[in-house]
Image (cartoon, rainbow, N blue to C red; front, side, top):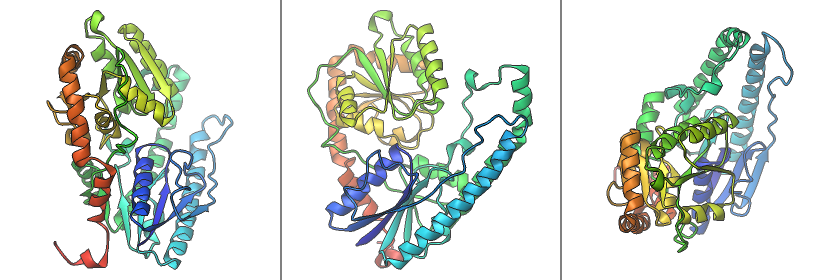
Length: 410
């Protein structure tokens, strides 16, 4: 088959999914051409060594105002947003026209970093499949407040209220564009049943579940000595629940308290300062590593005594599977997509979002090395059984929008 792969992604799980599926298509003898904008992140897991051809379309966005514009700055930025959406429209028209002219069998499309669902579906005539990992969560999930996000002075509070309308307009515009775009998508896939439910609640559209996987040649046991440390992986943001994790570890007896190592691909400076202060208050040794090489991440998985995973409503989560592939036990909050990948009592332990319950589960893993090793080994077995990228590719192929499958139920 001849396949067009479209994305306008940053680094992270969605880019990993696009990268791995492209690799699987090429290994299976198909031709894959990449279509993306010039602002898409092609430094993280670059596709240029995998795809047959690359088509990079210039996209220059209007930046937010760099100078102080008291009382008008956020409202002036709305004009920039309108200009950027027009540019995304033009980009989608150009990409769609070229894809349609090239006679592809189908298009595999991914998120847009600005409006989530790309405008491509408004113009594309070629058969397409949209892998939608999640709705735009900032619009549909409850907010997670932080003290550093609150206005501190009287002037800050007045300005916050004054700009409330601008924030509301920006939110409504992007949310409306995203919703209109996804209504045009001919076929949706997603990464978990939890994500499929979230998509339906957000957009009133149905997505089929096609589970993702992990590279077991890269994420594997290295027979390294385990350190007195636990690992958590994910962007350093409130959504990852690191504050809950620090409080839970702080409940462990001081002699059994491991240091917490966080590895993130992106960071919020405000969140880092917040977490460091919280760790100091709870007497938890904290390390934060940002954007490290993947082989270093694999070493951390192999050196940690457990992966501790407390993300808030995470739709899927690669980290638990990567840990399992490295024979590292998982202790996680029973929430979101992790309920579909970690087998409680077999590959790790799942708990309520309760610090005492989480601390007790973690202490059990830390004190019982035989149990931890058994969970780790069974985790690798489970990944090899169901969660490899070869398995994920076979699942994806069952959903391809081919004419042969269009009118059958087999």
